[in-house]
Image 1 (cartoon, one colour):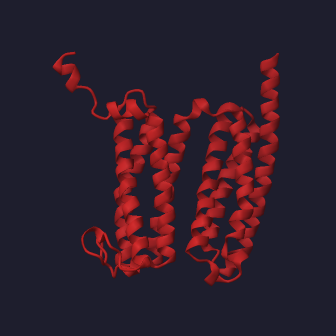
Image 2 (tube, helix red, strand yellow):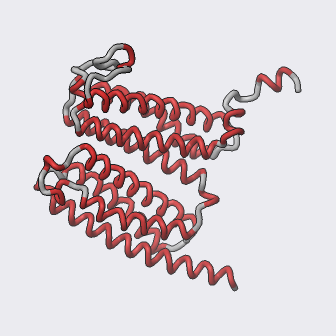
Image 3 (cartoon, one colour):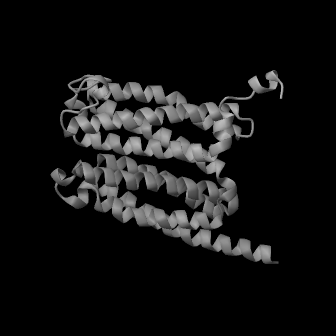
Length: 291
């Protein structure tokens, strides 16, 4: 091998060849989800306030290695995981852009996530230095957008291994998640003081699962099951899921309870319709192949 051919070899390729780009992308997605859930815990405990507007350090010396109390620990651990998530996002974007065999759509999605990452870091700092509801909302929805971008990219990368049965399975999982979403909400708990960090983390874990399932169902369903009615239902299901997530954020206000429950009920019906149509479309596709 010549020196020129060796030096022109992308430095990210040996790592990708060993572990695989799909695995790198999936790992990054898990880190993004973990960062969001830890951020929810930090918000629920008011942990940013424990740092007394100090950022990126807090109250325990270099790198806040020894947090002074539990709220400080939540904030420190959130920042710690977020740091690794940010590194993974940038690394995944670099790998996607430089590797010639990565779908350009995937590259664009993860690069968009990488562009949003420093914005998210700045918003994270502002939640500590200012802690206003507007900044908290921007911080949350930017994180959700990064999560969605990486879910879509992950589905594109794994698309060849996802079949029609995954559409029905995703819809079933989405339908099953809705009762848990309601049960973990302030509406079902009855007392806002019961909506503590554990409950909030659990509900937002269900929220991320809900968003992931509708994205998988929509993307794979449109690819594997060419049915106009199913595509319309899957589109409505995806849109309704984001409505449910938005209203769940506002459900601490009793004025939104009716809207939240109504949207959940409509979404559940949409899931049921999607399950029926996906099973019918899968059966027709199998009959066509058998003939």
